[in-house]
Length: 320
Image 1 (cartoon, rainbow, N blue to C red):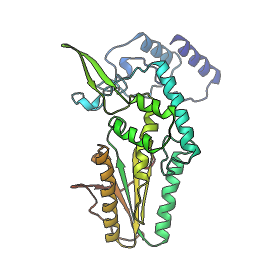
Image 2 (cartoon, one colour):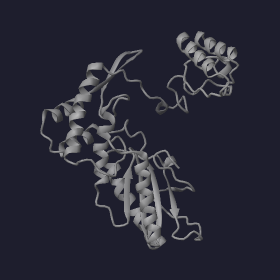
Image 3 (cartoon, rainbow, N blue to C red):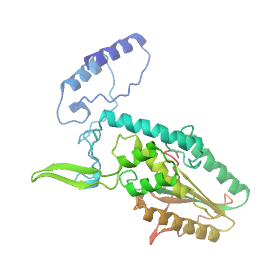
Image 4 (cartoon, one colour):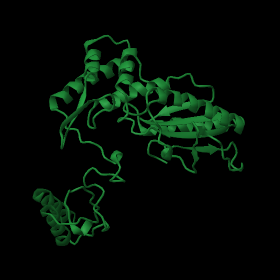
């Protein structure tokens, strides 16, 4: 910590009167920026701030910063916590080697769906946005109504079923030691935890540890199944990586509504098959009129028995 503080001091002294903005996570608790107690690291940062006449942008709050620990919104809710996985180094190396060979096979045989923009080489957020914008402009130029639907899979990686992954691997028809090793990794896995009554273990049937490089690769394999569906004309689906975006366009509002609900029923069949759920709080639709002066349109777009909420803005891959 002392070296970091000294480096910052040297840098700021060197640039002289020039203005500079420093952003960093120093892990330095101090009452100045919301912690209950001070720490030696926090004291070092206080000395740096006062010694160089810096201005602290953090606002002091009544609670500790959200970066402390692993807790999320509701501390009493079990799902607000995510376990920390300490993966063995040799195991991570083996996974990396196996996945490199698997991904090489997928790329060489063109087995990766082009509408999946997440966790793939030579794809980006910008491409996902441009692809959707091109299709929106095409619908408007054709004087059609368009409806965009954003679907968020709830805890996608945590609820990914091992049987779904194994079936996706089998469907590749990739007979090799690599495939067998990947399937073995998913077999006979157990979770163990120490309790006050002693160790408890149970079979693990779903979820990939955070930090494991196989998480995104396995997810893409399962997600490709729904992307490869034979969607009706006027329905476009793309993903990045576990967020799915529908664009539905047709000549009339009623046609768009019917087409959208039909597409969602097909998508729900896929989520039910793989025991996945969507987060209704993060799922919404946006209607695009075929003319700017058209009336505001409230559609009855449903997920099962639930209405999907309407929104006035749309976020694609983290960008509005």
